[in-house]
Image 1: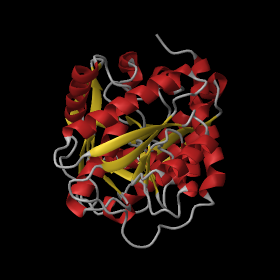
Image 2: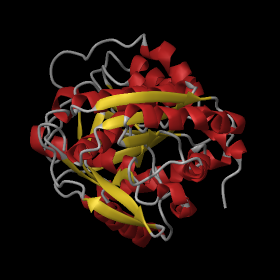
Image 3: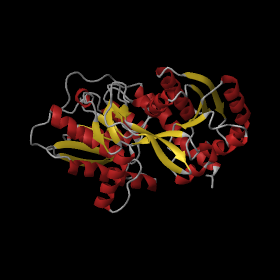
Image 4: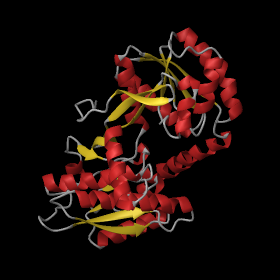
Length: 389
């Protein structure tokens, strides 16, 4: 029923990517002055789509195909603006991504969509920094955001802000944070701390655990003592379903956690894989997820067009193309300034907007787990207000 603990290693990819990206991100320059590339009415907009085709990993080919399909679906659906997509293969290599990005600019690209991972996205940002061309990457690593680079993936900061805002409104304003002792866990911890502080709540305690099965077991007494001594009303577990989440969800109730008194909250999706919803410690808990209605509509259109279900990352490519098309139609240009001027775009995962610091703000729903099923208790807003929610 529970995933093998060897799956903990999967999230190490984030750690390695973030470390690689940090060096490159430090080289980024500021946003080029003036507006972005102009687009002529009636003329197609040249979009460079950087995808990990040619990678040694077979999984990258699958992701690349789904991202390309989603991008082309978005281009076909938007009326009034023609997007001409040219695919460039990165082979999941940062140096090659930088090379093809420069090639794309020379061949007339007005905007770059992709690449997939943060090290490649940072390299592309540096490579085209003097071109006034925006890079809409699929990464969720905010360390590389800024200058001409956007990260369109789902970020810890965005999810934490949504969870913390809802929790505070429900009176769950004394939060204990439980995170792994690695870079991903620390990034998640920091995001929750910022979010709780911004909503007027209190971080009642922070507990970390060694990134191993033994580390999880050894952390249980400290988790329980911290909760009891701090009068916590909520516990945020930052781990993924493919990592420590199932073990904590099983073992914490066995060690005395009352999930009615202390609401368990997640910083990751609990509905993927679906068997995660069967865990007793998650019943009644809260987590954030993309707008289910928007996502279901996108999945249906994608399946009708291509005959199979989209990869979980496919909506990000769709969103990138929607942002480009809507911005071009409204502003007549698609640079950083124009892309960040919108109050919100209609995306495959709901409404979103791009921020001047290169990050993304997404409207998300709050869900709970009832009888092993997902139940939406606070729908995703249809528009983003001043605070984003």
